[in-house]
Image 1 (cartoon, rainbow, N blue to C red):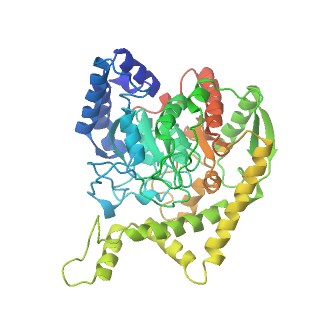
Image 2 (cartoon, rainbow, N blue to C red):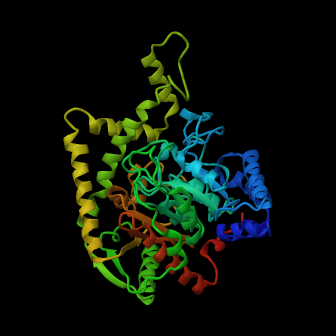
Image 3 (cartoon, rainbow, N blue to C red):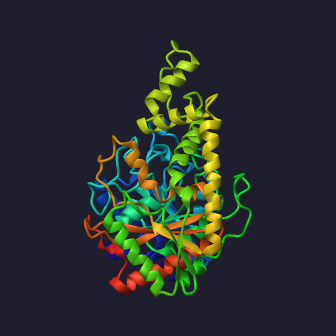
Length: 497
């Protein structure tokens, strides 16, 4: 079992295709790992044992018949509990949807099944994807496998923890302000936010519709690329879906190189609040890129300093609008429907009981920002800042091919450390938020351990819209250089559970 769970997704798929392993063997090994360690990690909210084994048996039957298998056929995956899955629960980490069984699959779920990827179950997350630590889940926090007393990032901490604890070789996350990249950074894994609109949002429970983006999570750059190729592509059911070919991400991951590339370093992505070890590892990564043949270009993007403020007006405003549908009348939790309360009172009682403190905080912020007399001053002004940020990116990409930065200013902080300080929590997304506001693509991959605490540090790579292949080209080159230097992927240094 230990050997199977430590294989990459690419290696697993090859062994299944060749008959060296069966999909059932691989699935059973990961289900056994979940049973052995997830009581401590709490990465999963729901494990679909029977469904996963049925999918695995179907893959084995296809191979036995000589049918062509896809590049990830039979490979297990942990799915963030924000995508609808027909027949198994989708809770979005909230009591409001506890026990809800969707009658349909999200487009992303459909594409995973069509590619014969084995879905192990649904992973824990901050409620409605609002948070940077997975402490806002209504079902309790997830631990970071490097140190179970620390956070695994958020909102997709369950997916990142499943990877780092070898409960799954692949995972799916969503990224509204950094919720794929920040968990990847603090768990020593790889996470990619594709270009906005590159992966369908149909069937993904909405938080902030102009920012939300699903994407791949893995332990290697190639594995992330293989998953990216499966889930990306135009979807007529999503009005924001881009009708363009998926960039050649797998080819880029297999041929990583930065020779002759111009790599930008933004001066706004460092300074007060950044951990010394994070900056040290980032600076070493820049030197590594230079040694691999990249030209380093210093960039000044002044509007990035305003990104956090703009985001925390835009995202809560859109959340206020999106979460209005949860009224206790149509589906999910219903409280107070005893014949003595009006429909309005039932809605109020349901929301009071069903929404957690962070969700309520953001709904109130958003409702205020959208209210009469304040819309232009708050939401309207934030959208103007968003335009300035996009213009800064446009100017930057006239000078460089990609931009690099630390993914997050610090390593994983202790569970509970920032629970009573929302502003400190929000600062975890300082480096990731500008990309969501502009809509371009970004990746986080490991770049070493911080010397002061021995915890993973992430390197963020940012690329222009629909140039997602550049992330994988640069990411694969950096990853290969680290593997050559240390002899094995950094994730293998994670403590055994």
